[in-house]
Length: 226
Image 1 (cartoon, rainbow, N blue to C red):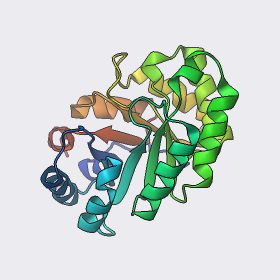
Image 2: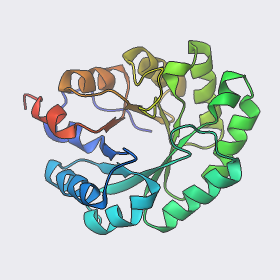
Image 3: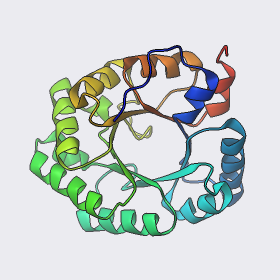
Image 4: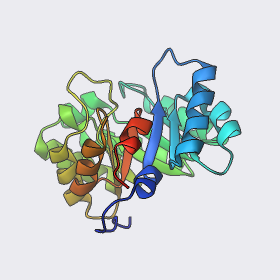
């Protein structure tokens, strides 16, 4: 995974690494359409929507914006077969990218072989980009490192900090930096959860994030100076 340039980040460049996100369970079809229209207007790289809205999003953004969706969101506690089926269906319906939540119970209890197995199983049925959500605020630094290594070994394309729905919190600069150091450019790093300003977004990029999951994308981009 190629690292971002060290040159100052422009508004356009920042927009291209944003997954413009709406995952609230009460989101309506009309709000998803608005999300897609805003994504096209802002020039972001992707929209991220719930599985039930993948087809709708794909119809509205066409080839101009990638469509990402989530699997086993937000708990990660689905059985592996369900995660696999969800990822496969989403891919058939137009998802270019799948963000799967690992089994947090397995991770917190050190059952890493089970975590690796489920990631590998989803990988086999995901032809597009696979991002692995590790819920970094819940894990110790050592566990973050292990989660990243397991995701790498299982064939993931990205490791992702957070769902944004866990009480432990969202992305942190420290977690992003540790994740980026661990994957060493072999995988991308997606920072997600609580990024609401341009300053926060740029701090995540400086720490090593190559993708950002943001709901308040317009506010973040409007905060860029160029």
